[in-house]
Length: 166
Image 1 (cartoon, rainbow, N blue to C red):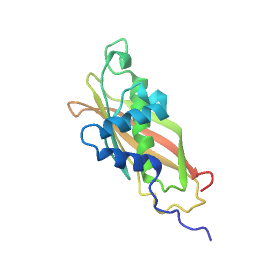
Image 2 (cartoon, one colour; image 1 turned 90 degrees about the vertical axis):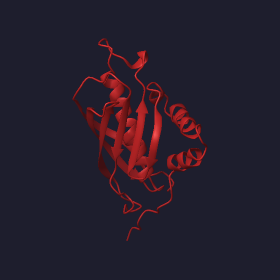
Image 3 (cartoon, rainbow, N blue to C red; image 1 turned 180 degrees about the vertical axis):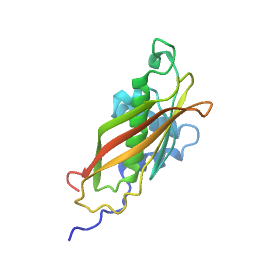
């Protein structure tokens, strides 16, 4: 009978926890490191506000580089923020025996984004995964502006599978 996956912390959550102990610079260093590891995420200049199993909250500033022709946050930049929040929340929630990759995305654009944005992703409890288990996971993401208005709602479908060598 397959065993249940171990509850060891994965490398992304371990790095966040280690750097978060550094006052004022820890989260900034972590955010920069994510951009180095996955360069496309750096295009939105993310700032992690919170990362823990089951949850991620990431901010992205409105700046010229992410604006569309209307002067608002570009739709694809919003998708980038949604995928980053969903991916890190998923990674922080998985046992070290597993990995994830985005498989699909459904997005609703609800309002014009005229301010900085905050993406919040929630993930179900994944501690009960068997070591050999593969499955789809749908991660809901809400993106809100500085006024608390939800401007984007997304669902990111992740493919969860055992990590190589685990």
